[in-house]
Length: 139
Image (cartoon, rainbow, N blue to C red; front, side, top):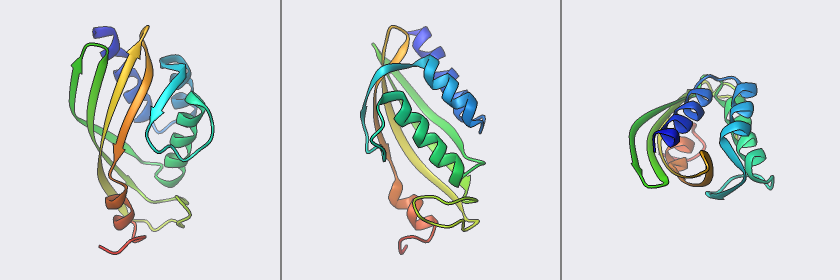
């Protein structure tokens, strides 16, 4: 169990570095090459490549993005993380030119681990709140 928590912590620290290269390297090291996503990943790329693309897109739009872990629950080979994501819209994101607006939204992810690596991911992200804060949808 503690190795799963260490893997999760390493991934989380990389994500909060804001360094796309470090994030990509860490993904290669901690995510199974055949990872399975149960989340609407906006790409046709396989496994770890899809995760790298998600972070490249997020960092392009929100270079100062931070993921604050609010709760972590671990049971067996799974870990649940409830997070608050914050950032400033400084680059193109989902077709929206930079607005300079700040966002703060919630997400919940479940990770299943196998052989010390992330093998499966379920995710729910509050995109409605995010898009409202960017002015893309009415409040």
